[in-house]
Amino acid sequence: MNRLRLDWQDVLLGAFLVAVAAGALFATRTLPVGHAADMGPGYMPRVVSLALLGFGLFFLARSARGVAVTIEAVRLRPLIAVLAAVEVFALSAERLGLAIASVLTVLLAGLATRETRPLESIGFALLLSALAALLFVKVLALPVPLWPR
Image (tube, helix red, strand yellow):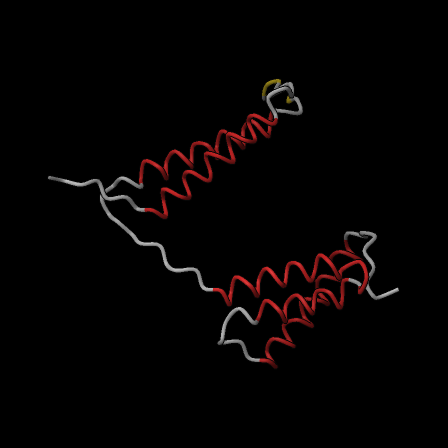
């Protein structure tokens, strides 16, 4: 007897993409779509949602190809470090300014792996902070505080 073996990574990814596409299609159902020459506000969300739906269905179909792949156990160190980095940036960008918040974010994200070298992380954080300040404050002229008030 042949048992169907599923690639659970593809099943979960496909189901996630289909769910996001269905949610977006539902949320934008009342927007007028228009057509390619005269796009309405619902045109691009609908096109992107349908493409996402197509990818989701592709991964769901591919999951039944007979190759079973197990999903790795979740490692807490990278998960916690990246989530902490995002949260610290979100909570400190306005209070501490872009320069300090981006340095803190890069340093915290660097804790996700044991291969991180402290001096390299500090140099990388300073470089990214300078580039972020240059891009967002100078080039794009966004009203983002660079330093604490």
